[in-house]
Image (cartoon, rainbow, N blue to C red):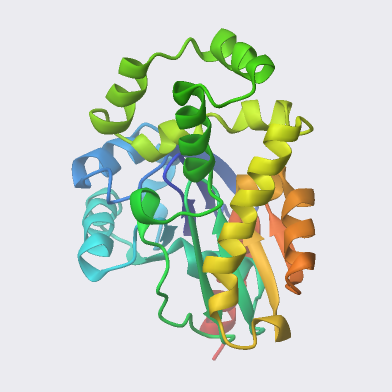
Length: 287
């Protein structure tokens, strides 16, 4: 049995190959190794009761996760999964590689994540190129949920958000300066907290302020991420993540303005990653 995971900072999607049945799909909390340790990862997966009956039958685990960008971070996840699935082969890779499998398959193209965080790389049909991006919500993550949430909260606290929208924002979230500072600087998963304001953005996307904010955020992502690649206009750029999916019209307009070829936009790539991995591994067994 093969288990595949696509993990972001806010949530993780899992899909399990079940003999003579449809694949089993379930969710856990986000398992970004920059924000959770081995024990928290182990506990997070164990909390998913769906997986418990199959633990001893799982032979291969493929984990594609945000934050799995260096050997030490991948080792954190690998160690936790080895404890959970002692009989299984464990592979841990960045979420960008999973996104590439889901959108490009074996074709060349740019692949970007636009969810809680953001990142981009070029996929040559087999491997990702090394990336200068993906430097996190403090230094980067342009166009991500965390980036937009940071702008929303600072505009609200500084009093620069339009009065009508600020009234609605205040009624919904009851924010105070102390509350924001505590969540951003003292509590766990500050990037997920900042990204949690995305539903408010979606509900008021037609407001002139929100329209400009979305356009500005995606414009910054395109300029600082996509346009740094030589001949970027020659390849389709594929997007994975809730922010790119929810605000696809703004994203498409900005990409068209800069001559970016649009590829796929997937909210969640888990099913596409799962089928790619299972087909690849099944084919390998035949040779």
